[in-house]
Picture 1 (cartoon, rainbow, N blue to C red):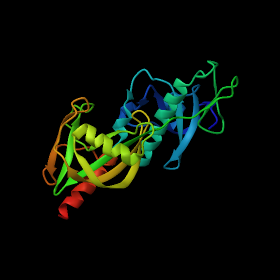
Picture 2: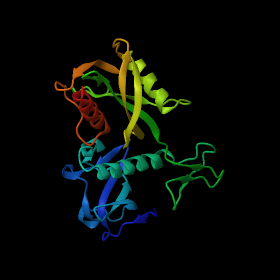
Picture 3: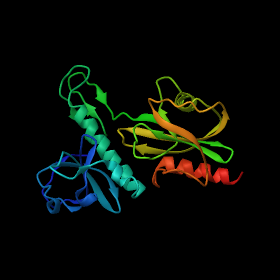
Picture 4: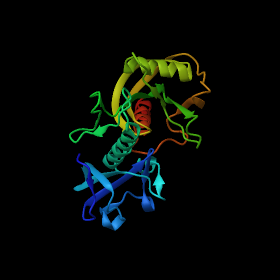
Length: 256
């Protein structure tokens, strides 16, 4: 985790990130020596390894080529997770330059992902926001919605952030009721996925429809409806937990 000034001979994958953006020249994550990408002189730190190469983080904005890490979401899952780690760490360090308790400038720990205040001795760690996402089946149909934040015609399953003082299961029932007006049953855990938009941990579930009619929350959703498993609208790309939940629900529908 030690930071170092690059001489140019260092080699690996380069995550250059600031303000939740990542440098993707030619649409790809840079691989090679620091000098190949004119990165010598920058401050960098190793944050992992991928395909036998060190993954480096440089907290800086480049003049061009800064893009959303979403462009890598349908690539290799491990690569996307490492890029997500870099993006989140860059934002964590940017937002914790000063101590929130006493206002003094902080230092970076050399042993863990943390910022340390030498004045009041507070220690800060990157915060992860847990959120739920759930695929809901009603006989041979699945509930899909178009979210206000995705106005590109994409439909997905319902999702939302966990609130203070509630369990993951309570969050699922609450979010489903708030966004769609229906009740669910037979809730079961499926999988999780780090999601750096900006700092989420998506916890995925499957559930069955219990009762109620769809009443869309217009603040969160554009529309929502039941779709037959073999006649789905545009859905998220592979390697996302939303797609996994949709495919798992479709598999259950086919068994009907």
